[in-house]
Image (cartoon, rainbow, N blue to C red; front, top):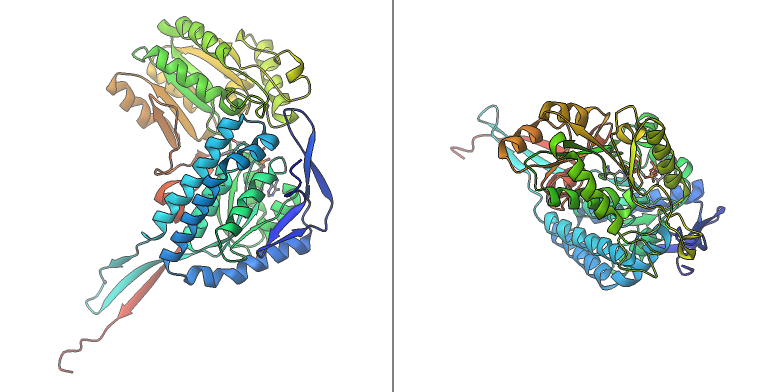
Length: 487
Ligand code: NAD
């Protein structure tokens, strides 16, 4: 039980037991209830937005050095409590403990990164259009941010929004996913410990269609920072009732291209890591691989071996397992649906295709890493986001065919290339219509470079300096000055 955080809201620096209905939160590895959250009421949402609004001016007016120091304190507090926070995450999300700990430490890294960025917010002086004018271009924090996050990376996806907001001088109301609320509440504990002023950070919980939607529609919220599915992102974009800035980090359907010049073992290692990590529940997961025909069967044979080596377990009992439980029954059901669709349309099952056997897996949402070959774009695995441990593979003849297949999707988040020939690397990386292209590696997102999608994968960026720009308004101050000669 996560009793100390159960059913609480963090509003205006105070922990309150919400007045609304209770929603049970389960451990996806065991199906046991680990706690409950409050469905925030309209009144509580208003209180949270009002608290953030009230705290805004004071926070924005602090010297950047003070906001930077606060973020460093937050990063230190999070890192110091990484073990406990990781346990909370594993219990609600299912990923193995070591991986959860790694995510918590990356959240701490984000705090330190944006602490350093906070003191490097420069404006510009622009030459005047006449000699008696000059222009200052200033960056000012947008105001109150409503952050709405999904369940697959419960710490980092809150953290990128939180850290960039705070560094910029914004205040924030966070609405985490119903499946993984306790990591966000644990982050709020650290905010308190880091002595970040009351109201700067608030956490409300409850159903997205009610609590998230209320933030989207709230006139007191100046910007929505959303990560989640493309369907909900579109709904948010269409349903705001006041004009707001928005960054929408949405779904993906990410391709990998393996050319004949690739280091085959490295490509296999990359494909297996980025397809199955976090049980494939990653927006930048590799969904589909296109392999040059001459090396196609060799690639399949090696992928089968590598996928079968991955260990699966209850993330608490097996902290070093490669894979834990899926976060809930829904992504598991979708994985099975996409697998059945592929097999019905002629795909070849290379490995997996069922849940692992044994008492350990009897009650949780487990599935073996699954690979299907000879896939076509008529199959859902190649054309929709599975968000589960299922990988579709197809051969290609010629780079242009591979590019055409890779770009044949409404999504544009991340893509992957394995090739040794630099001409191939350049040709592919310039033609892939994606916000991120990882070449001979599968870590498309790093803290100091912008990360974001295009097409139906969203608008806006997280990470890097560009991620912080999302939290600023520009202000142009045009100054006319008289010539003081002769005074
Ligand atoms: P989701 O869209 O169902 O929910 C995301 C969040 O939105 C949750 O907090 C939910 O409660 C809330 N929500 C739901 N309906 C809402 C509404 N009408 N108004 C406001 N908020 C609402 O997504 P999910 O199932 O939690 O997460 C999986 C999806 O997230 C996948 O599509 C994945 O690709 C995407 N994702 C994208 C990125 C990225 O950086 N692009 C990263 C991680 C996950």
